[in-house]
Length: 221
Image (tube, rainbow, N blue to C red):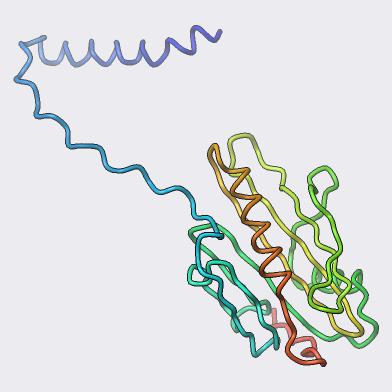
């Protein structure tokens, strides 16, 4: 019963008091301890990507320019992984970006299928997809971006994602953003972070040459 559950902490405290009293024979209380030190300041709220200075990362490997909100907060890895990986630890946000050239026509569906062969990416679920729209990014590409929230157990952090795949001629682009947050402002933070990376990073993504890089070789298993 709920009343019984609520009483458990109090009952446990009483049992602890009884055991302490028995061990000390309930001797007179010692002088009161000195007052506790003042509480430390509460931890700062989770970082918002819109608070930092806009920057741009140039990838020689994929021959692209990637704008980044709060660029100083992002750590970019562009070499050890088959994808360009940008991580913002404070905002719990990560980006995966990849550009390549197909042998045949690079339709949006073909580009997505290829990207999913390379990496386990979030699966779309209509019940959790909040926004779906086509955008002209990079310029001249037929790109579809989907923004949604992953299914998580009650009490777990809210996890949001943005998936974008685009094609133009024989060129493909894949852009995946994921972020998470917990607490009373989690939904707002997830929405604002995804909006920032979609509008700034994906919306401003540029390929530097007309001919995109060929499909990079995958590392041996």
